[in-house]
Length: 572
Figure (cartoon, rainbow, N blue to C red):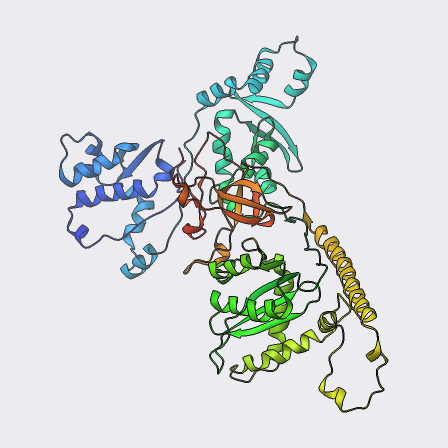
């Protein structure tokens, strides 16, 4: 008994209104067959019309013009035309008797639609032939059909879970909803099943559990669990978008506190801020890793020349040349001018890895404190922040730090500063004024070593808490990985962009948690090749797609705007 599966209609365009009746009826066939292509392609169908003249459509000799083009378009379909009088053609006739107004139709046509293509039905002979070619299923089929009593016990136990229906092998499946037969899928069809139940829009690229349950409730083949796991792990679209594991990679690797003040200095730029009354927009900050002492200055534009001048006047000429300078990978810090000065002073520059400012965490943390302090003293128009900056820097340097239990001022100068309020009230004479120089020096050094020990203890406690949520991950040279990049593309939603680009190739390891990588398909010209030092937390293993099977996805790069793109060729 016939029943309707889908309905479709559209209004004629202005030129189409001039067609003859036969041309309009033929146009309806061409449009309908094209619209319902996912249901009709690859199978025989019948076109039923109430226009008797179209019955000769498939047998028309020497067609030309509009009819010739239409017949050519219909050649890829297997169909015949049948006549049905209009009195019996009520289901389709109803759509033409009460057409919708044209504006409503035009508005509806502008709405984007998605069509999910269905696979061509597999014929029983080809399915049975593939099952007989499968080593595992063929053994079960022969046992069930021949009823051999000489089979081993293992085969007999396995065969108990299978049955043959119309020549096709199925596996019995028992679940709370009752017995169910699962198709024994031979190897030739597994890739299409995996793609349809994972990649298609109706499957949604869901994770392993949901995809596995969707497949195991319909099909069976040996090692189905591992097949689904391998397929999903190699899905390029999923790898680009989804994090591979809930915990982050890379244990904490804190920089050990130096032995002497200003042996290691972290430097950073803070801004841009509202332009001050004196034309300043940036703040350069330098902080000593042992004492937490801060040097700061307001800058007009934060160029490398201004950074170099700050380094010479505020660090080199006040505290001496440091051994190490830690900064991010900003242009001002990697410029040749500053690098030449550091080289002349024998300073080792340690830039952080890209998109991983945690290496310079002491400076980054002070930036938050600086913002809080500045916000409490700036004017309503935010133009006096540069005049407030020296005062709040002094306030920070004279405050006791929770980690060292000393103020940075005391660890640098060996004493606490005299504040304004200290001159108002009388204090007894200090007995420390006459302490011998050797004893005073010893006390200062003792405070610094105590601060260093307390910093070690605080770092150990932080590492313990951090490592509970992170795991150790290592890669070997030549491994392929995905690289996380915080892509921002104008006009696109950040939340819908892919998180990873690649693949990249591991070149070598530069430390416990840092690697040097390059694109897996670098330019042939070595001068154009670019490498990048990245933290392990930005990497995750690349799952290579299978060598054969249906198209999976195109690997997006950062230049693509972070879009995950799948192959849109039709399934067959």
